[in-house]
Length: 167
Image (tube, helix red, strand yellow):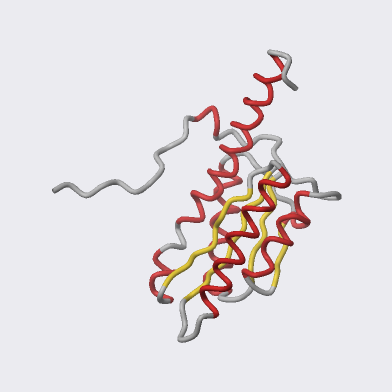
């Protein structure tokens, strides 16, 4: 039996033009040997897509639990980011702490996105081992693409709604 492809597919080029977009990056310092590599790859991919991320739009926090607050701060004044990529790495240990942190981060980031009506990309690795996390560092390029795509798709939706008098 053929293996099922697990990616979301590629977005069309029209949605990957990041020119003029303001993207924030919230990054956890916990497991920084992983998260800083993720941050750097995400920033490099954003630059390839035409996004210029200012230093003030990169917000470091102690751990993944603090990512929702950082994301909200980047979406609000003075930054007013169009989207945020939240980067963290939660690696299972011998206690239930992993479950609590992973749940808090995912639910908090979802809430920030829904409340702000802006994309908050879930770039928090949740793995059993450090090796698994290291294998997934490359995913951060896709987080950059998701942020740009979602901002552009939402802009298009809002423009269509305005065109028919709904907004």
